[in-house]
Length: 301
Image (cartoon, rainbow, N blue to C red):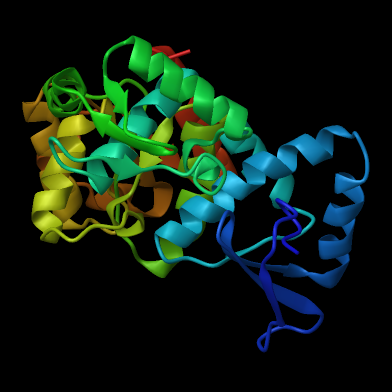
C-alpha cells in the first residue's frame, strides 16, 4: 500500500540506502522514504490529525516530481514543508491546471481523460470531490464540456482561454531562469521553489523540470509567454538566463533579478542597473525573494 494515499502500490527496498523503501504509485508517483517514516504515515491514516490531511498534498509534490522524472526522497525534515507548499495552491491555479491537462491530452473537437482520483494530485486537489467541483466550475464558465466519466473536452472558449494566456500571462505563474548546475540545486529547491510556492502561493516553472516533446527553445519561449513574471538568477552567468530575462521584459513581464554574493562582481554590465537580490545561502534567498514577490507582484489569492 502507498503510505501517502493508502492505495495499492509497488514497494521495494532501496538498494542505495539502508532501511529505505522505494514506492511506485499510480496516484502519487515514485518516491523513497525511510522505513520508520513509512509506518509513521500509516499511523496518520489511522488518526484524525492535521498530518493526515497533509498527506493528500504531499501526494501532489511527489506526483509532480515524478512527472518530471525525479524520484523524491522524503524524510522527517522535509515532508511537512513539501506538503504545505502544495496545500496553499489557489483555486485559480487549480482551474488553470485543469484546462492545461485537458489541452495536453486532447485536441479541438476531441476529449481527454482526467481521472478524478489518480490525477487529483496533479491539480493539488484534496480529493475527487474537489476535482468534481473544479470540473463543474469550468463547465459553468463554458470552458469545458463533459464527454463521459472523467473525460472532458475544451470548448472554443476553453481553447481561447489557454491560448490567450500568452498575451498577459497566467496569474500566479512564475518562470525561473537559472543555471541547472548541481551547485545551485539547493538554491532552487530550498530557496526559489519554497519562496514562490509556499510563501507566495504561486507556481514556479523551471524548464528542466517540465515534461515536453517540443524543441527546448520553443518550449522555453512558450512557457515565458504564459508566465506572469520571471525570476532570473544570474549566478554562474549563463547566457541563456540573460536571453530569457530579456525576452520576458520584451513581453512586458516583470523580472526579479537574483545573484549569489560571490558572483555579483561578474554580472553583465547591461543588467547591473537592475536591483538584484544578493543572497548567501538558500534560506536567505527564500526570505528576500518572498518579500520581493509580495511587494511587487499582484497576488492571485
